[in-house]
Structure formats: structure tokens, C-alpha cells
Image (cartoon, rainbow, N blue to C red):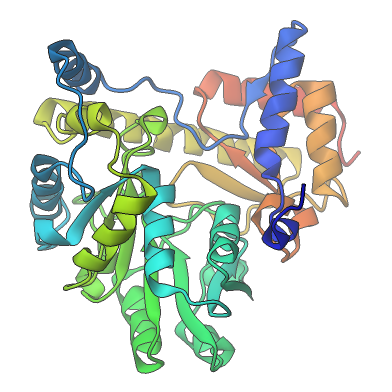
Length: 391
């Protein structure tokens, strides 16, 4: 049977391949310390679970509007106003099937065949493949520690060509955990607007930040900087609802109807039980749980960074958000993929090689997630030490 030619450009998600191997080893009785997948190890907060149970118990589980449950869109709008210092009308908020659904809608609404999108490299791998799925072209912007792995306005301006459609950035970023300031986003927005393009900001790790924004870790820089942009967010990371597959998209004023037409055909509607569960995500009691978990992630980060440096990993830019360390392994190995295989096979430690995140020096880097408790992070460090790497 003939396959679509676009499939030739779609690469496997290496971290999922690695996770599959980890599960095989666990089935054989091996103890694996998981530092590969970007999934919080905490359970869904109990108030969210209870809200879902109450709703499902009523049995009235039917489609919602394609743009999402009106009450949830209003709750997200209040969250922006009360906690994020941004005034966003509920009509601009589209509830989606995870952040991936939000990205699909935004790209489908803005990308014509041959349109190019500028993406930081390293960056989240699915972005470039989603662009390809809508017949666009992903163009990498090589970034490094000199700019905290974030693109600059000057770099974007220099890379812009006649067929460039837009720029996609993330704050906090995956795999590096670095942030963009309000001023930096404003500068990037100014370039894309002057060039007649689109700015899309991925904020799915928004809220998970450490050592910055002392008054509130939930400051929302993108919509403070500009109004006419797309913002992707999710209930997966800060809210701990990965398996519920629920996210949202904030669209520029006047864009919701166009997105609605796409959402009707793509998804019919987001998961109804997940939406009713998410209504409890913004309750004060839930927010207390989430903030306690954020502080725990910060503590884990502070345990892991010195342990990695002591082992010989180079961390040129410390993460300020998400739950990843993007570590240079060149003092330990000349091939991060081979190193990742050795770590999982010999030490029972799973970490993600840089190949997943782009083409800019990927074999020099590993992404290491601190999504497991501190004692296990220290145990992983001891297992790695026992391999005698770099000796």
C-alpha cells in the first residue's frame, strides 16, 4: 500500500523508544530510574479527580461545543486575570485535546503549503513534524548557552525570508528549561509583526519556574508583551493532568471563528470528563497543592545540578523552569546517544539523547528530567559514578 511522502520526513520520537526499552528492562526485573520522559511523577490532584468522578457518576457525558465548555473557558480567563496579570476574553480561549491539539489548530489556521516556520534548535521535536504535516517547512535557528538557548530578535530578523510565515518559541523551554522575559518576547513580536508574520508562544510549562518572579511564579509574559499572537498552554505539566489530554489555545482577537471551524472537523470537541475535571484545577485548594509541587521540583533541581556537575556534566545555562537539565556530555562521551544506551543498559538510568531536539550539537547533549524524587536522583548519580565515565 502506498504511503504519503510526508511520512519520509517524520522521524521517531527517540524518548518514546527509550521509554519502551526501559519498560522491557523493568519487565525483566531491572530497576530503572526514569529521567527521560517529561511527565510529572505526582498523581493528578485529588480535587480534580473528585470533580471528574462526580461528573461521570451523573452519566451525562456528551459532546461539548467544539471550542470547549463555556464554564471552563471562563475559568481560564479568570485565571489569566487573577493570577497571570493578563486580561483575556473567554471568547479568545479555545479548549483543546492537549497542547498538541492547540498546536495543530494554530498551524492549520496559519500555514499554507511551502510556508516556513522558524524554530529554536534545540527545541521540542514534535513542532517541526506538525509543521511538516500541514505542508509547511521547519527552519532551525541554532541557539546555545550564549543566549540561554533562546533566539534573539536580531537572529530572527536575519533568518527571515520571503516565504517565512512565523516564529515559534517556548518559555519555559523544552529541553533547556530557560525563560524569555517580557521584553524579549516584545522584541520578537515586533520583528514578526514588522515582517508580516505570526508569533506562536508555547507556554505549556508556564507556572513551573524556580528562583525567578519572586512575587508569583505564574507571571504570563507573552500576553503582557502583545495581544495579536497565539499562545499554547496545557493542563498537563503545572496542573499534573498529562493523561487527561487537555490544553488550550489563546488566539488573536477575531480569530476564534476560524479556529472553531477547524476544531469541529478535527476533534468534534475535547474530552468532556477531562473538561469538567479541569474546572477544579483553579480552586484555591488545588492551587495550594500545585504550588507545593512546584517547590518540590525546585528542590529536586537544586539537588540534581551539583550532582551532575560533580560527575563531569557541563551545564552552561541553569534551567529556570520546566523540569529538565540540558547537559553537555562531551567530557564524558563523544556520542550522547551511545551514552544514553549505556546508561540505561548498564546503570538502569534513563535519559534522553540530544538527537530528539534538533541538529545543533545533539550528540554533545543529554536532556535529564528531574521528575522523580530527590533520593532517586542521587541514586542515579551514584549509578553513573560507578560506570567510571570520563576516567
